[in-house]
Image 1: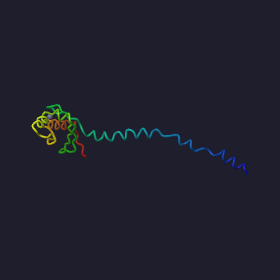
Image 2: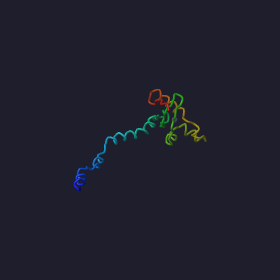
Image 3: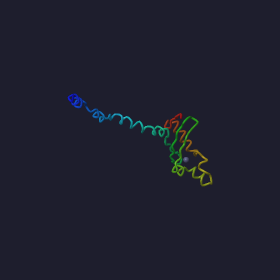
Image 4: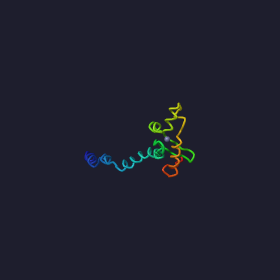
Length: 119
Ligand SMILES: [Zn+2]
């Protein structure tokens, strides 16, 4: 019986056509998810300007006692107390902040521009 073979071939539909349809919604939701991760860590650091010398530093408070201050090369050079300390032979790594910067950071915390984020 060759008749049966012919019918079988004709009625079988190709299932490959379904694979070409891709859901575009998955791509849209994955994009902002990945981008927000590094931003979350950076968001803990707030720029604080020294009221005396205008140096900008990045400040994060992890607890009322634990303050992390990031000095950039430019802000170290801008700070009058750092410059005086280094030109007197001291090392800038030994001091974490100048006195007026500490006041500026305290004020920024009191004003709420630097929030306390527990690690
Ligand atoms: Zn300063």
